[in-house]
Image (cartoon, rainbow, N blue to C red; front, side, top):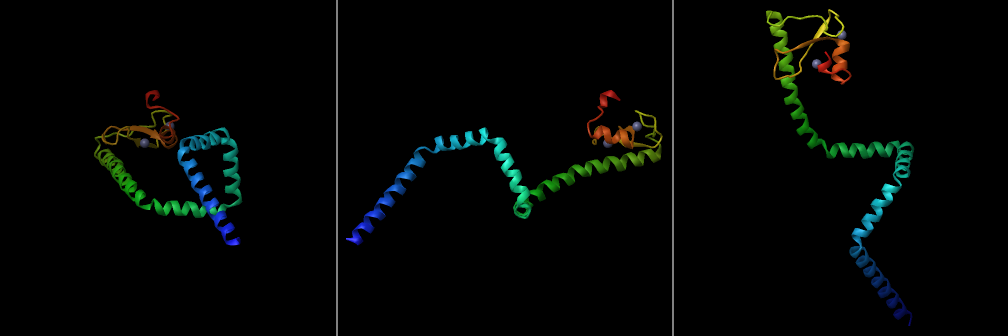
Length: 153
Ligand SMILES: [Zn+2]
Ligand SMILES: [Zn+2]
């Protein structure tokens, strides 16, 4: 008798499991939608939760980040080489500008914004190494940070 009861219990559980699986499959979109809506409605709560988790588990967060970095190392290599290519054009422009300045083809002038004599060559287009704008260190940095626009100069 006990044996049969056990068996019935097992089949009951199996049926339940199959039913749940069916339900999830049938309602996948609905469930996904619900989960998404929950996240949207509770974005601040979720963010707070993440923040607290990060604060309480700095080691775990660090480990996750490390894993992520290792996984993306290959990807990063590719973008590094692209960066190197872009950088080559940039360095090339700088070297050429220096060369032509020494030759006298390009004449260094004071910062076009404030008139400071100690100026740096800025290339609006690295593919045109001879076309430079002279700026002091401060205004050069401001231009690169988008705080001043070329049109304003
Ligand atoms: Zn520049
Ligand atoms: Zn300046």
